[in-house]
Image (cartoon, rainbow, N blue to C red; front, side):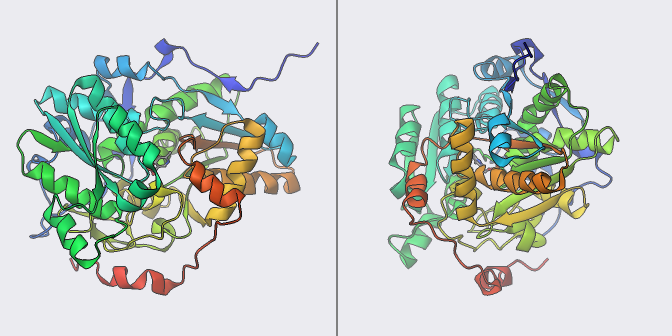
Length: 455
Ligand SMILES: *Cc1c(COP(=O)(O)O)cnc(C)c1O
């Protein structure tokens, strides 16, 4: 009898990483600093103090390679971590590919995505510094759910501005946030000056992440016991997600792999992609592996592949510091595609920098191809993916099909960063022939790119 084929590679709780990995000290050049929105001078940590607790600001600018994960955070991580690494044997078979496809699955978390990896430490550090209420924005609702979950564990109030279009279309996400004790507002709202300004132009404005960020930031900046939390983009968020890649490296070793040829992840603000790929990039920079690291973004919100690398605001109203990043312009309102978590006008400054250094590549994929990949994945591997990681799956499938032609036995690792149980309306649109790919001529991006601040 031959040994049964192994599908998943698991770690025990005591094999869970005890530090986060900070890529910055290993890069050949440091990323450009954030600038003050009015003076355009580099800002010091104190400029962020009205919004974030000091511990997170220190992590944002840290030059330490490893930052210990507090015991209390490790204890909560153990509710779902270490997460499984699967070998997609059924998908490989369906594609007839000699490639070996691995996916790191973060849908096992209480919120169903990778987001609690950062919401838990963020709330922990806020509580340490006496914060009583945390505000945030959410697009599809995954970040709001993850933050409301973490706030409920620590007994902190959570107030969430949800992008109008998804508030209207995704009542179940809102109910999940409310079940965890979150207070949810449709954005733009009449509760903030930023929201009122947008509502004056259109009473039923569908909102955007940029607008919702303006609202949450405005409220936090006005109250000394309230802080703001961001679910992606910033260095400390990417840092917290590196538990994903650290675990994946141990699991790939258990699977007997001594090389990685391709790492693929979807990018909205870049956190799940960085979480998987930064520890692998460390190994690449050290000469231990030589994979191509590839980000995949939606064709209708292509920040890396078609945006400009420039200083821009993180929000629509221009309240945040200026960050040098790949951006379509802070006034860009993406089409209402189904991958709500990928509809952000900018890209993490750290990922933008890594991209500029030539250490990674990027591609844009239209949404119908993504859902086709998502359905094939569900029918072979049994997990219905969130719309966001279907972008990474579409690219993985393209590569695996190419391997079927060339005979290459590529080792492909991808981030399956969440399940799609709350995204069935999107699958309905796809399965019933109502999903379209929007045209994206350059004129679509020109007006917002013309509004980039001049530095
Ligand atoms: C939030 C989210 C994303 C997009 O955010 P990143 O910071 O780019 O990871 C992607 N997938 C899922 C499942 C999400 O919840």
